[in-house]
Image (tube, rainbow, N blue to C red):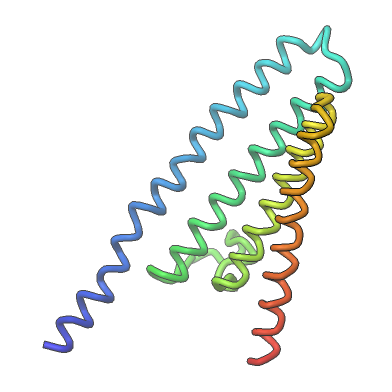
Length: 162
């Protein structure tokens, strides 16, 4: 009876697989958004100001960072919670594959959120957003920065214990 329960519990981890596939499917939506941004850039290239070009590039950069984050979380979560990824050609594997534990993933997610928040703040600044809104956005960004620093500190303390 105990072995059956353990087998069911261990097998339940495969229920996470469709969630990771759904997460990776969002990258396709990101392709669409990047394509739309590139079309807008191409259409207005002749009349675009430097600020408009930088804003469009920041939008693309933002989307690329989000796509990187999605792929990293899906792959590292799959490897942590479902099954190890074994590749015949280790030279083609990302360097971080097999080295990401939940602490590393949390830190990378936090850093990505800080970078995305910084890009949004810069875009708002470049769009002449009202000062009070910029202050709120800056405060939120500061919360993200402090949270990331605290996560890094806790992770470092945890690693020093072990």
